[in-house]
Image (cartoon, rainbow, N blue to C red):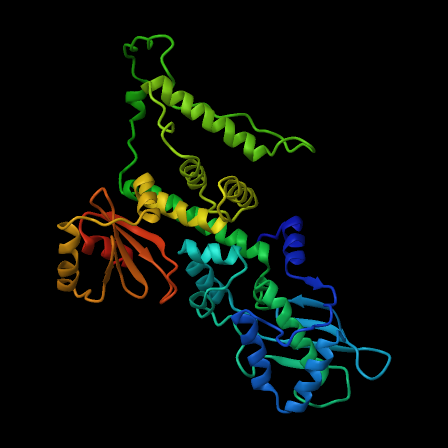
Length: 420
């Protein structure tokens, strides 16, 4: 028997898959969209139209605010559009929703790169990500329907709805994702789960092949001489965990309290056990990056989004700056963060030998600049610790994100970056 979906989850998902937007104000400018995905929606409409005159009247209707509230559900956009008669027409645009396989490809690709996650959280859609599952409509993908007697394809009311929908997409690309079948909370929850699973796999991958030690029951229960008790007042093996703080109106944020208590316990334990404070030499920004990197959500869950926002504001950075720095910290700690933020001029030697080594390994197109070697989408940075750090960007974007494992050999670092 197939297990039933819990009612609370079913209701939440239903609410997430239906959004209604108030009627938009009349448009004073010329363009209905400024984002590339909003313009792609407009192009799909205009390439489908069989009558340019109806498009012109539809633009005028949309610009004058003839479109009432717009409701978006998977595969459908609906609104009432005012025409020449007193009663408005019921108008809708239908389009294909993505399959579960398409969504799996899209979410797997997004979760694999922190820059893609950061872009989605900033209401941006990378070109490379949009092409994974054919998110954007193509000519013929939009199917208009209207209760008016006009048999145009599309009629002016459907065209007006399309143009106003482009304004919604411009503000929030998650409206496009909802049209294709999934709501914002559902997508972010899936990305958070995939990101946490990926982080856990990376942390435990090296030990995954080690068998778990076992003890035969007969040996465990056999009579034996117990060892003496440990000396009193020895420091514990691990710092203690704080209590659970409730969510109380007017009280401090429970996550912030938990984080503060956990950090205090960890630093006190290290100081007690070693006599040194490992965090005393960190700057405020470095410590903020370290704190954010300790949470596997990468800013996707509600709690970690608040953490990233607060840490970024406190250090005069953006959440995207913090996400990029967290990726560097996870790549190699404080040394990798320095590589991200501090270009420098390395002396002759390992850096000068890197390009011949890359050419010999069939990577001839790297251009040097200070301690960087770059192609259109790949980059190696030489650190002061003598290691090479891999970076990746969408082609020609100059939006570099740390990837891969540092290596003393530039070819080895590039191989780790490419997953070969």
